[in-house]
Image 1 (spheres, rainbow, N blue to C red):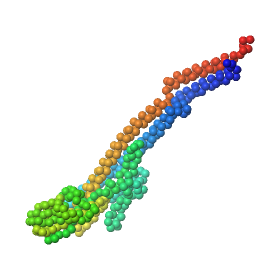
Image 2: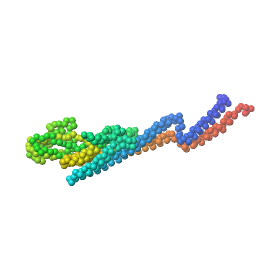
Image 3: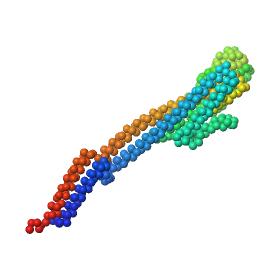
Image 4: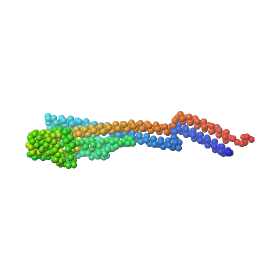
Length: 407
């Protein structure tokens, strides 16, 4: 095979240029710290690096979301704790107002403080986050969660938001609720369950009083029929001077036979039904529908009772019992909400820790693929320098060879 002088020059130049290119690549690897300078260096490795980088960026966003979530949960917990403390103070004042030695002037003084607490609670129920959104308004976070209408015939404090749950994604599979809706925390709180006398035949001096609220609540829960109102009426039939029978008017079912005493009546499931009568006389009572009332409305109703100079002692006692039950139910709802916040916070912390571990794992995997091994790269640099020097030093010898040198 004959090699022309042009071929010798081409091969020698190409060899020098290739060695210079290889040396330049090694220099860039050392300067950048990256082993992959272009996709063609390792197509499979480049694809893995891109995927791992996307995962790491997504995890960073999840970490930011977790921080936003924790800040939101902490703010709501602070607000609910403030509401809890204010309502606790109102409850103390309610109990104080029920003292027999408290007169009308004292009641009005108590009404002033509870009215101030009502305003405080109302403001807290309309708390906003740093972005100006109303915490407890659900999806309607641009407008106040609760409105106050002093001229309303019914409830003066009304919920204007919705039950929407604003969630934030903290991992690929887990989204956590940022705030509780005021519908769950404040609005959907049951008021005191009640019953009323609906009729009497023969019996006189009839009255009903709830002596055991817990026992009556259980009876109400088991027996109240929201579909058929007739099933919510019960009849006490006097069987003898010492016994009476309880029957469901709607179904006709006999529920129980209880002790009876004319003038005293019966005690049944937390109820004291007083009556005077004899065998054959009947008294009917019915379960009232469950009502829901937010804490601001409960406090406001009791303020009205405190300021009423003409209210009877029995009516005031009834208003006090209603208020205490409403307050206790509201406190339970608030405490449950705080508990759910704590549960979400624990989940967020756990997911955040998992994201950190996953981020470290992905960064390690990416580093193994794309980052340069300096010991190996320095050795390669020395090898490429030697190869380039050899190519350059042999260039003159190879290209300088001529047949005329042997003549």
